[in-house]
Image (cartoon, rainbow, N blue to C red; front, side):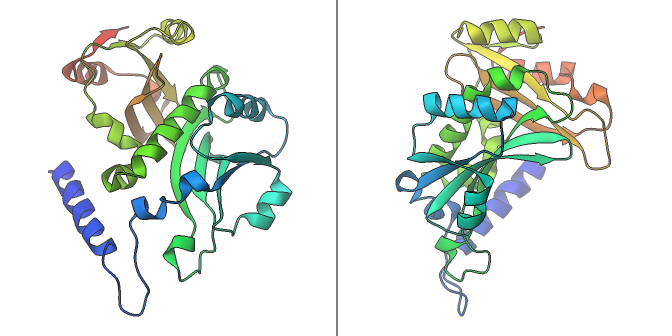
Length: 257
């Protein structure tokens, strides 16, 4: 029932967003607002020389392919963040987690919706206070996930509004899920065809608003195949459960613990 209601609300929202509103200017769907992305420069915002930023700078040069890009510091970012001529890739922190965020610049009070800012996608990558080092190894995969999502969102409003959860509808037939971190890392490094890495990203300590993420990433193509966001009440919440393993099996995967 919850899934049906979500689909109904999404459909109604898309229909409403596609219609012009009297006195408020024309409304555009997210897909339409992303249409200029390939021709705009994406500014990669770096604040210092943390390990995350060094890894990001290195992997951008290798993996970024869907738009022109330039690096910029926080001073330049502050000057141009209200310009709709740019997109921005930033490292952000919230409730103990680090994210890679792709946003369109613009002024919040702009009447022209095509010039208003909005968040394209937010990808969780690490615990702020308890990083494992895997986030450095997987940085290239995280960038590929962001780019794949953006490409799909430019042609599909369903993807654009559903977000990274749209990966949960993909069949896993013929894939192998590695739940053990060591086995997953080895599969990633050798780019094993059909291998899926089970990655959990959680803050160091639970809190009133903390969440954790459980994702599956393809070792060879860096495709996102599962994305789950849950409340993080205790450390055990970050582990992959038997129920989740069975869910992967029902989607066609072979699960290796």
